[in-house]
Image (cartoon, rainbow, N blue to C red):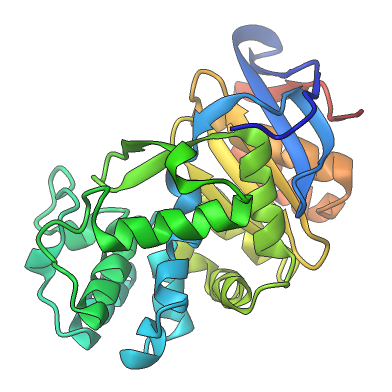
Length: 317
């Protein structure tokens, strides 16, 4: 996978300060690209490769929007939002996942995502919406249900084809691995992740525009109260679309402007990616000072005695 000319600059550093004294540090890389894949600004190396993890979900949802599955089962924007989600397993969210399966005449037992520890059903797993969406497509297309997570299954090949088309890459060049939920995820350069989110935010594709509308109109379905993606989209209605991934991945698209931001914390720390996202969104003017203050209270100040500090900024090359 290549993005063309190599572009890199000094990486960001996130410090955990306990009463002003450095206790821990995280190294973070970030890049902003346009919808053509051109690197606009960078901190670190835009060619750093990482698994995109759950930040892939809006693009996995293309399988639902491009096959007539939404129309066949009369699925709503709330249904589409939960398909893109990494949810908290609240009653409202679980009911939304169940609604997708019910409309597609599927039983929850067909879900192959894990049952969370201490829970009773795979419906409560944070990726169950994505799995329900995949299964609805399989039902609509009369594809097998028992092996829908296999890389060679038609639903996974369909998703891979959509992502490959967006990145203008041969599908066979992608490196995949199983995510914790069992579905394939892909190894990508940070620049490619940012480019995907620039495309998602560009309003140039009706299917992706519908996915963005679902996510931004129903942010509580995408993550949940108190979670970064939900809180950011609530504070920036119609301006930003945001989706997190495990192991320190965070992706954000600037709606209407065709720009995407991808962040990777090299040690996988969740707290660091949120602090960096707020820091960079402020630097680029993508959020207001009041929104930045509200987010910082939740995700930068970590208690009475400790807070996060971000050192560095994006560089124009």
